[in-house]
Length: 315
Ligand code: BDR
Ligand code: CA
Image 1 (cartoon, rainbow, N blue to C red):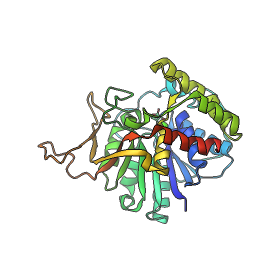
Image 2: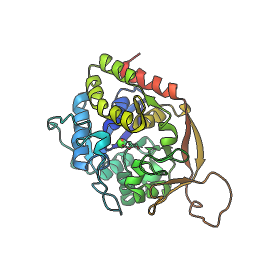
Image 3: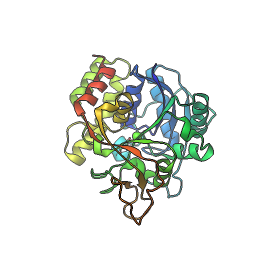
Image 4: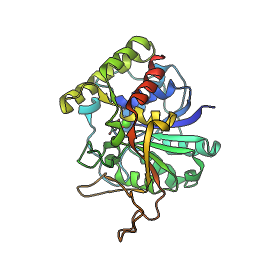
């Protein structure tokens, strides 16, 4: 039986890669997309999610979610990473579909309550929708199967500050609420996603072999690859969001450390995901009543890329 998943997303070029990866993987059954601000506004994220569903030629619900962070003031959108439209400035025409009437948090709650212990939530954007769903219906914490997030970092340098990763930094209060909830968060952060590089060559193979979304991913991916080339001097791009999908399919490709995580919500460490890695009892006890997260610290890069290629190219 494929695992039932909901992807919570801010598409986003690497979100598009992740969503098509999930749609192409027989191990997963994608029940819907919930959208959030992040790489773009929530309105644009919703249009983009509808585009992806349309390109894939499938029919699944898209539910619109949080427009702004829980507490902090909204931040500028990173148009230098994903383009002003979130898809590398391809400026696609309006999608034909519409979001469902139910909001993102309500869709998550309804789906989890209807399928107890069967739904895996995969969040690849800021965590406001998950935090909102927990706030509205705390019982979901015990009724989901798994929560997998792309976000955070423990030892690897951050990508918006020396210690913070973009999804967590975009809404640190929501992220802390998600880590503090009574469920196990599986964190796929920069400690592993900076070790998985999607080379341009594989992106070309996907373009040449996947007639459904290969060309779209290649065209949007140029902007993303250019960002990495100019900012980091690397060829290709990091496989952030798609690594969370790989984890959902095969967690054995990752080395995991267990421990409670808290998120710094203000000051110059804002957005830092702080993992307590020892059994020590500290006078600072903020981690003491927090459920252990499973934090990915190592990854089999070629295993993740092989899984991605198999799904996207089909060999
Ligand atoms: C995360 O931030 C966004 O730019 C990407 O879509 C990914 O979810 C990486 O830090
Ligand atoms: Ca994302």
